[in-house]
Image (cartoon, rainbow, N blue to C red; front, side):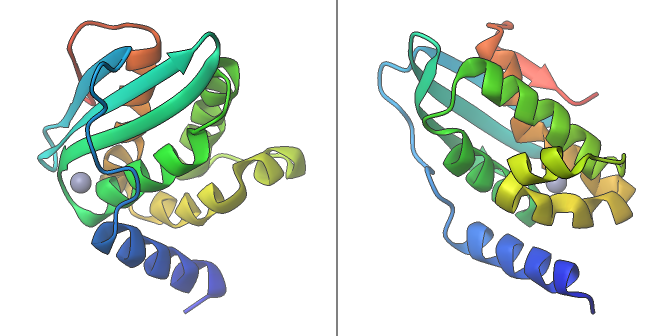
Length: 150
Ligand code: ZN
């Protein structure tokens, strides 16, 4: 097993067992539910904004280990970032898990998110990994009340 694969598995196990930011924000500025019918993953993302700054971001819900770990890592990484930074990370993360080439600079920006490159070898799991990101993006763009990966 390669280092990236074992890092990936450790991270998924850790965040699935102890998800970070797994709570509701009372009086959230944005709330959006995301659903992945392929796997049954269903999460609600809560956002607290201060102008362009993501002051707090949390999630609740249930699903497979990959979707939960992805939501947990995503919320940890995005807290304190600006809205444009979050949208840029969405694009880079999406390309990472779909196996696209990234520049060295983009890999630096990803930091620990790069561990999710392991998902690109399991096409059926890509939607699990991107579901929290799609939901976060939809929430920032104020898109209705539910987003679906389908
Ligand atoms: Zn899933």
